[in-house]
Image (cartoon, rainbow, N blue to C red; front, side, top):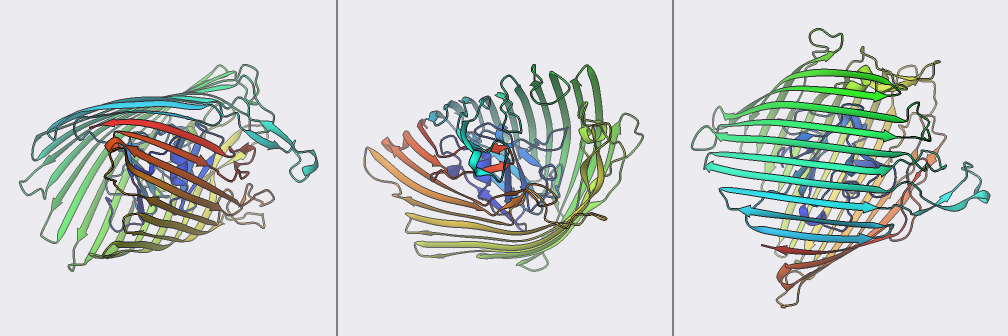
Length: 614
């Protein structure tokens, strides 16, 4: 992990290979992370960490921040996992060099880098019309390599659900219905190229293109029939890392990134209640970053990161054209002092100037942010404590409007957050037994949160009026025995409170936040076998429990508690050349909801077959 003294965890590649597995499925079991979904495979999904909003949680793919220019959120369903090597979850402090240290931590999806000659093809089929195919080819050696891959998937998402006919508390008129117009089609392409001209330098090019077309079901249980949505997203990152000395103590990293995204909503029958039959939003962000890491003495290391970025948003709906642009300059410095062999003191300071057009002159805000912390690290244990101050700049859609019904407010100020956390990690081996665990506690307050209010004219306007305070405990435990059994689990306990000044509601629990999340998991494996036919077999069982949540600020609508059981199996054949996998999601067929009006699939079965050659 890039930040050894931060509350963090890593999801490794072997957990990401199950058939029809999506990023929301993986992150749901991580301590401190909560997911909001709007349907089945391919439906929009967002993540939040430690009770923050999804706009306050930056998500990166290959170092490129995916959060959009409209509402500041990132759609997890548009991050295919088939070429992701691992996922790093930072619940508190994002790593030094992150282009936007978030109030709510950060999520890093790191793609698989080519290691030599290899090729893979996988096909998947499953419940509710799910089918997909993916493949990649990698060529090269340690000095230069390239990986090219592509995938396509489709899901009908015609799963059954209980239609309460709008009478939430009267079960007598409930009827079984089938989800309509919620199908999804996604295509994905990757290019990863690496070059090492010499032992002191490295060059990497990463490009990813995703397109998705899907039905657009309404929030209510009255289904839409003709409303459709489309998404296109392309990103590219060129990174050069240069060693400035033979010992590798001084390095310079240069990175250029480009993100382009477009979404279209087609509503010819006006089923979604908008004022336009066609809506299109296009956004572009270009950033240039330079990071210098250097050692001042044998005990003191420092770093300086400079970032310049420009973004633009354009929207068209109901004959109305609008556009906005913004520029960002940020300087970040950090110092790490190894005061004792096991004790490190760390500090980070960031200064940012952001200009937004139209009508702006000079920096909108000049808010210093940063953190101070200390860490104690021995070969088997780590202790850390951090105090942090963060901010989130308003998105262009919040400043200048996201369409006819959502007006902008150019006077919005950044959301600010203060955080304190303490944590510990430990790992120990007893011959063929390995145990590990981590625990942490945190307290975070935020102010000037952006919330939307409805005007008498029927449109909504964002305002800085909200405040929140979240306290929590996080616990992760795990163990491996004899190379055949692995047990692990995570528990999150949150106390999320609305502290908005002058609020008139008696309920102060933040909506859409489960105050207790439990996620145990067990895996049984044969290990590598000597047989010529069967090479390995694995069986896993996981459970995710979410306590009930409020769906409104007043606490009148309650989403009930939910427990979801998943079962997975894998078999490798002929020395690992051929693999078969199966996964049963929601094995008990529990009724699940993530957003009121959006039922989630019941019991689902997915199977896949893969050929992998090295």
